[in-house]
Length: 169
Image 1 (cartoon, rainbow, N blue to C red):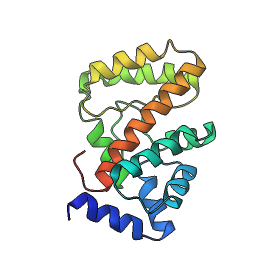
Image 2: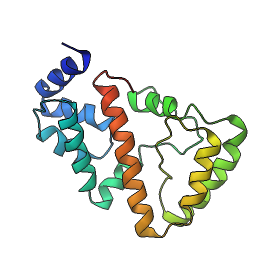
Image 3: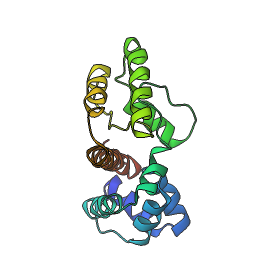
């Protein structure tokens, strides 16, 4: 049985509390974790991904903000020893030190405009691209930015679910 199938079977068999704890490392919204855990068992990874995507799409904005609170600012080196901090460090590994000051300035402007951390799926992106996306999104209105945040949260959650289940990420 492939590693992902074995990990999915273990996830399906976990207690509700343990399943929610695992899911919180992927998306730190308690409503998300409760909903996805309650939907078990999942037959395969695509079924789990679909449930996770639906849960994020239906999160109220307070649930999205709860998830955002667990994400470090782009360009900051995430602290902590937990799985989520390690994943954040890996996801932001493309940020060059020379761009950290510009990203910090952009983060401040973004937070002043929108009232929450700038969220972007940083995997595979360099610092210059992350900064360009941040600057572009500063031009969004509130509705468009909330849609962008939700889309980025879904991307990050998908990547982390794959990592959680031992697949390539």
